[in-house]
Length: 108
Image 1 (cartoon, helix red, strand yellow):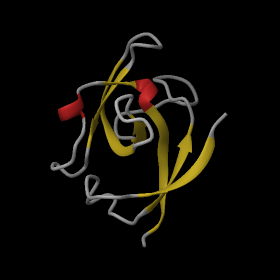
Image 2 (cartoon, one colour):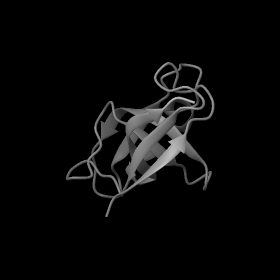
Image 3 (tube, rainbow, N blue to C red):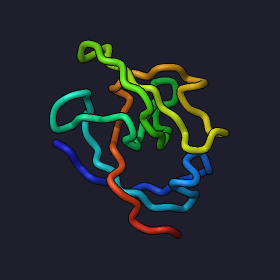
């Protein structure tokens, strides 16, 4: 079952799309490459890396790599080239996706 939650952007890694202080609405679910909970190239997602539990990043999916349920992977980029993303982390398991951003609610 999906649920929705708001979050506030910190930092500048997603500029110019999102800036520090922007409020976003995300749909939280277990995302996959197919089905109602599908992610696509271009989607902005919230991820939580195994190496940093409890820390969430907002990034854009730029590539998908199909595989079985456990081996599907995503490549993420910041909209700001100075941001930290898959250029440093490499491919991430699709299971690290916690939410898909639906829209910006307001700008602070």
